[in-house]
Image 1 (cartoon, helix red, strand yellow):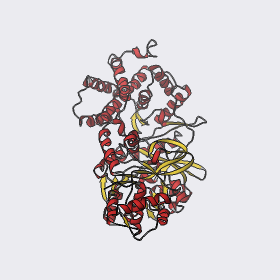
Image 2 (image 1 turned 180 degrees about the vertical axis):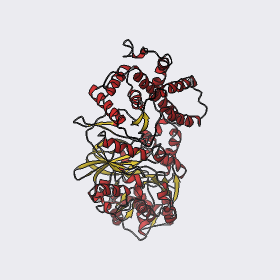
Image 3 (image 1 turned 90 degrees about the vertical axis):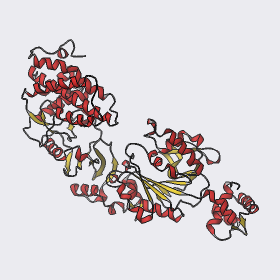
Image 4 (image 1 turned 30 degrees about the vertical axis):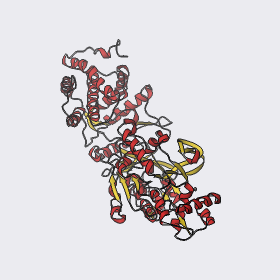
Length: 606
């Protein structure tokens, strides 16, 4: 059977949808193809027996068959972090917009186009999509790598289903149904954006073939919405994906990036749509502009918490956007009555990592002591909190003597508060827990690990005999947790690891995690005591530099064993434990009044 030209395909498809005779002029109006090309296509189709008496024949339907859409894949595995804070609670595709749930509207549009073989790839909060299998008869595929690799992982899960296939996003809203039962060739949908944009801007060549795309541009057609893979595109793309999938550089790539890397082998055209037909919402404020009733109708615990604490209608909350995500938390910015705030949402599984009751005890203590005036309110049971957002802040500069002195005075204020926290934190006990994690991956057979460990424990026995007090400590005491305002006011934030610890613990963390040289560390110690420390104080506080280095070294080994890459920090932590251990042991065990070599004038700047 001869393949069809684009004009022939459009004529036959229009007739198949009409179910009644259509004149050439009516075909022109439906297809927007020139009347001359319509006339030529009709004549050729009549000669081949595809059209008779202005209607499509069985032979014409057979000619269309290779272009029938086989199925649709809806990708719904991602976290949609840009849509904070609602995405903290539920997947974006399950939101109700203009009275309809986003993914349900899209499923209905596919079914209306005759596409009933629909697969949804789920990951983040996948249980929110399970009901769709019963309601619409869709299939569900779980992508368990949604948090560790980009959306190429979702296509990998369904690569055996890719044929003549629509690739959709669960959170798109189409004002008109864009789906068709038959499609001529692979395409990427696009809308035109006037002025500057940070979207993917498409370049095209002859026949509207996509020749490339750049992130950012102006006055451009941009990638937006659904995509169609024809059978040839699917075969080639799957072959390429199979070849590159296990490469480390592929993990963070969008599938679109893989396509663009191999664009010469993958034929895809642009499909242009009028402005406003395809809608993707990158923020809550953007969605609210599209659906003014969205905020009033949303069932969100996050917005309920904000409304209850700050005594405001939910609709007054605006200027909402995500902030940099941490290891254990998700945070977003919002504004209200001209003031700016941060909402902190606990990350998945953090209740096992962080004692929230102890954290909130510490935050209230920090507020009472004037160490952190950003904290407003929160709930220790669930872990959320609201804080003041301070624009234009920077972190502590340990090379600035005034800032280092202020940080050490803040530590002294905390330590001398006379208060008690319910949690305890000890570097050596923590290292034991990390060792248990490490041993799950096999014996710890690193060269001289056992010898260094034995020395660390000997030093701990000596330091414990010093009988220095256990006091409230921050235990994550390093520059990123200091916010400095433009007027030089300093706030000590992030109290997740606070607890009762040896008074030297915060000094140990600061030295190791800031990579302070002995001279700068000694200066910090003088700031802390507001005098020259005694030999016994220096000895004890430097022992905690070793303990901090050892604790985070074992932690880093455990993280590496689990597949994470901690980079140069592994060596940094090891160095602070190994470099000073022998001198500290000698200082204790010889009970010498002489300073060790690393604190003498000849070596303290090394």
